[in-house]
Length: 120
Image 1 (tube, one colour):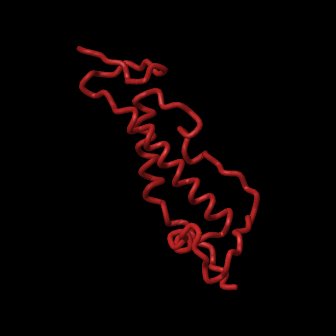
Image 2: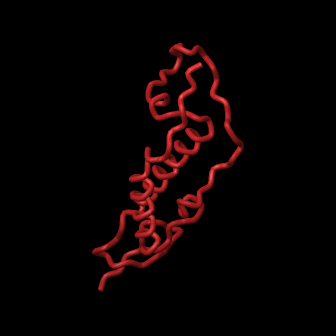
Image 3: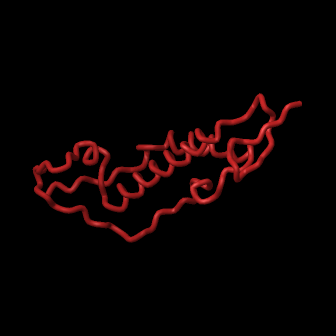
């Protein structure tokens, strides 16, 4: 029974050679999920809608002028929904947990309540 080590010098977790997970894909899923959670956090923090974000063009004047976004609260981002944002992926169980977590974050993207647009 051939065994290989996950291609990460720090983990050293032996797994069957036929089922070696691609750790770089799992790491990428952590980064993408972090980006999605950061986006949701910033939208909430500044009261931005998806529509306002998608219409933004750097350097272009908007109909309401250059009114800066104002923080609604000083709540720091929480990584509690994404355990591997602050902990390493070390085992195959960790990989399965991260896959499920990523799919949850991916499926929830855009489903949070949007703040009302200020039409001033």
